[in-house]
Amino acid sequence: MSDSTPHWYDDDAGPVVRLYAMTAGRARPSSEAFDLMAVVRAQPREAGEVDETVLSPEQRELLALCSREPRPVAEIASDSGLPLGVVRVLLSDLLTAGQIRVSRPVPPAQLPDARILREVINGLRAL
Image 1 (cartoon, rainbow, N blue to C red):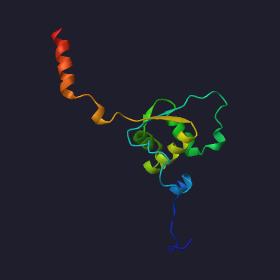
Image 2 (image 1 turned 135 degrees about the vertical axis):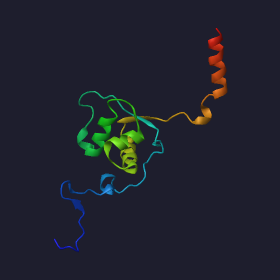
Image 3 (image 1 turned 180 degrees about the horizontal axis):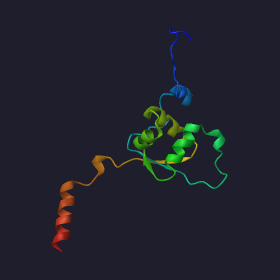
Image 4 (image 1 turned 180 degrees about the vertical axis):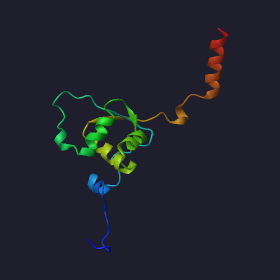
């Protein structure tokens, strides 16, 4: 290899897989359910019900990460070592396949008013 040839891999890690190869060239998830704080949980499956041969190694890793306990998308991306955009696309595929469930956090506008909560606490203390 000459010095003018780009070095697209790390000697210790081996060749690098381009991110678009993991997502089949897609840059956006098919679902808008995957914001940073959306909580992902693996769907419980019967033994032999999931054909893991159709899942990519990255999808199997993401499924394993959220099968132990429900986890936010940001935490899954951090623990997997994959970029957030790739994780969102792969999770979207798992959602379409029925492998995971996604819960979105309660929007701040729907949370109870802090003033009301303080009044409830003060009322409980008064009892």
